[in-house]
Every structure is written in structure tokens, then in C-alpha cells.
Image (tube, rainbow, N blue to C red; front, side, top):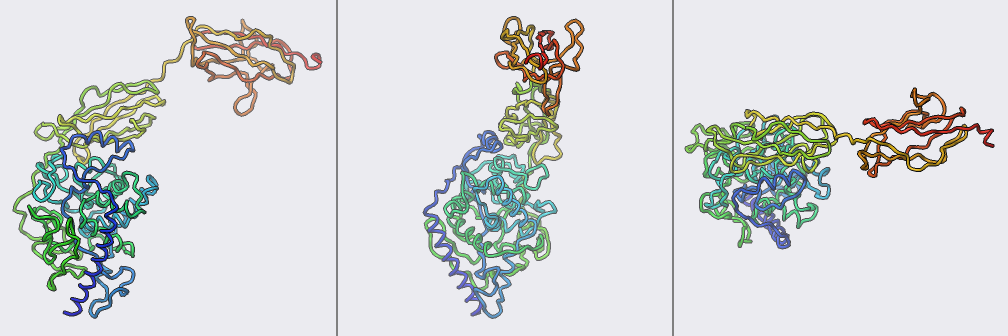
Length: 600
């Protein structure tokens, strides 16, 4: 037993040192406090989130629920024998713990890359996501995910019913957590539904956001950690971000321990073969993550067999050493136990689940079963203006009753320059108590034509979407019934030169200034037979080539138009420049071209 005890003593000493450092860092942090609240402002916060704003995290992201208290081995993962070299312990524990399942590791690194582009000042390290993922869900239960990164079986925290945890009443109608009475933390990064509604992301590009998907959850967690302009290269900001996830000193210590461990080195292992947490399942019996606290127990007490308590508020002492028979030496495959997670699907290195079903089945979800449009489904606006009415839908369940706090995604589909307020093409909003969700203001843009605005019940693929037909009409063409020249000087030039004076005209409609009126300028041969001229004065087009007709000219805000410089070729004579508008206003201006030799 001497080698075993020696190893545990070394591990305990290292843990104490890490905890002490974390406590020192914590004193400088300003962590957000937890405020239990009824869901009511989610719609406003979600709009702010979608438009690029950063709302303050007003509650722990996981609801202040349970988490895994396993600590990393003392041996550094990239140097298996550098810190300990006891007989019979060749460092295999460290090597196994340093392995992160392939999909999970890819999700963390992809989130880091995305945040590097969208929030470069945050400096999010993927190892911080890995540390939180380890503590929250044991890296999605050892990487028990399918080919797109979604957990094979649910990972749920305990009911947040105020009995040993925060009190958070149901906000999602049981859509994600299967609980219609209270919220539970959901998925590999353990988001509570009300927080996911504000911070949801589509990390794998499949067009939906799902807290049970490691790519979606990791990206959303990254944005949450980067909120409030945090710089995660600064220790105080790291502490604050972690405490925002779960406001607990013990939680901070545990995450920091894994963060430092993963920074020392990791490697990829196949999905489903990661090391599982050693704690027993929580009392919920419904596939909850292990390490859940029982009703009425404090966060730092009796979290699992063999660990009497760990540092928490008011308790900065070292952890009590595990008992010698407590299987916590970091072995790669924990021995099968009938009390292990009943929701775990068997896989390489994973225990076989019990055959006895949970005694208390999870409540049947009563989420959105149907979306219907409220009001008109035809939307029209003039180019450059705002659509007069905002699209609205109502979510109801199978019984036809309204579903509150359901997520509805509005998405612009088709070729158009129309955008929601904030210049975005899609936005997710929450339904109100009456089940209705209203889209933000929709700006028409300058591109005319038709497009579709689709409303989708997020996470409910079988619910038919609602399509709104939107049309952007051209701006009304400004009218002008008269054109007049400003100035009365004779326009005269020699051959092979240009007219010294620029020609300016003014457009009016019923005597009032006509701004933005399209005008066409054409050199003609005769007023009675206005054929386009092929010689004499000309303009230069954008490529510098001679042209005798110009289109696309418009009067300014004062109704005035100054034509480009008029040049002459080698042909002398009298010519006419005719200016016209779409409403039939006509102005002829005489141009005289003299021989260059005669003018000398």
C-alpha cells in the first residue's frame, strides 16, 4: 500500500498548492452574483445578443448546479515520468486523463478559432473550454456523441428547485430538459435553458442551435466567457469568467486545476473512449451528471464516496485524502458499477448500463407542436424604407395551449439586401406568455424584388415552419414637368477643343424643385427631326470613350444638374443638345463649334 498512499499524498499536496493560488487570484476578481429570476426579459436580451450586444451574465450559466470534483493527476501529460515515478505507477493515469475525445477536442478548437476572428481581444484558449467541459460533463461523458457531435444520451443536471440548489422555474416547457416544473442544466457544457435562449450558437453549421451538441455548446460557452470585454490572457478575467459559469470557489479551483493540466499537453482519443468521472450519479435517477448534490446538502459536503469535503465558501483548507480503497487513481476504465450513469450508452471503456429503468421517468416534454402566423403573411415595403409591420407567430403545444419562452428563429431567405435591425439575416427570439414571438424591425434595403421570411421552431424539426412573403418595391420616380438652363452665356468652342463653360440646368414639377429626377442628355441633328448626331460635340464615358448620349444623370437636392465637360471634334457648325425627363420635359441647348484656324 505504500506506493498507493505515497501517490495520493503527492496528488493532495499539488492540489492544495493549486487551490491556494486560485484563492489568491480570486480575491482580485469581481464575480457576478446569482440572481434567481422569473423568465421575462429573454426576448429583449436575445435581440441584443443577436444584434451583437453583450448582455451581462446575470446568473451562473449552469444555474449553480452540481459538477464533477475529480482532479487531474500530478504527473504532467507530456512528461509521464517527470513528477512521479513510483513502482507500479508508470504514468498511465496521466496519459489517459490527457486524452480528449476527438469530436469534443475539435469543438473546443473550432470555438477558439471562431472567437479569434469575431472577438480577437478576448484571447480565448481552448484549454479553458476543455477544463470547464471536464468539470461540467466529463467531456460529454467520455465523448459519447454521434457523428455530428450531439450527445447520444441526455446529460442533465439536478432540478433547480431551491432544495440545495438555486430556484429556477421552468422556462422552456421541458423542451430541452424534460422538466416542466423547474429548469435543469443541459448538455456537455451544462447550459440552463433560460441562459441557452440568450447565448445559443450554431457551431457545426447545421442550421440549428442545440445545447446537447458539443460544437454548438462550446461556441456558446466561448461567447459567454468572453462577455463584458474580458481578456482571457489576464488571470483576473479568467477567474471572473469561470465564476460567471458557476459562482463557487471550489468550482474555480477545480476548473483552474484542469486548465493548467491541459495547457501542459493533451492528445486526441476516439469518441467514446475518454476517461469517465469517478463520482456516482446524482439522486435524480434520470441520466443526470454525476456529482449532483442531494436535496439540502451544501455544495462542499459529501459530494462523492471517499471525499469528505473540498474547499468552498468559508472553507479554504486542503481536501481530505481519499480512502485507500476509493478507486481514484485515474485508471483509464473505471470498473462497472450498477450505480453508474443510467443514461450512458456502452462503448469502449464504458460501463454497461443497468437493466432496471429509472424509478421516476422524466416528465414528458410539452414544447411547441405548431407554429401559426399572427396577422398578415404578405409584407411590402419601398426600397430603403422599413417594413410597416413586423412578422409574428404563435407557438402552441399539442393541446393547443400557448407555449411561453419557446425559441423561434426568423431567417431571411433568398436574394435580397433586406436585413433585420442590426444588419443581420437571422435572429432567434422567445415567445411571450401568450405564445407569440415578434420579429425585430425589418429594413427593406435598396434591392427590389421578392424574398421569403421563414419562422422556425428551434429544436423542433417536425414542426412546420411559417413562411412570410416579402416584397420590396422600387422607390417612386421623382417627377419633373419643366427643365430650364441656369445662366445665359453663349456656348461656343473651337474644333478639337472643349467648351469652357459647364452647362447647368434645373428641374421643377408644378413650380417646385424636383430632386432626384433622372435626366437624359443627347446630341441631336435637328429639333424637328431629333436624330442622334454622329459628329460634332461629345462627352466622355467612364472608360474615356467619346459618346453623344448620357443616361443615369439625376438632379441634386436643389433640383440642379451640371453636365460633364463637352468636347469637340474636327467638325465645325451649329449643334443641339437635348435634355429630357421621363415625364416629357424637354430642353434644347444650342452649341456652336468654330474652326480652330478661323478662331485664330
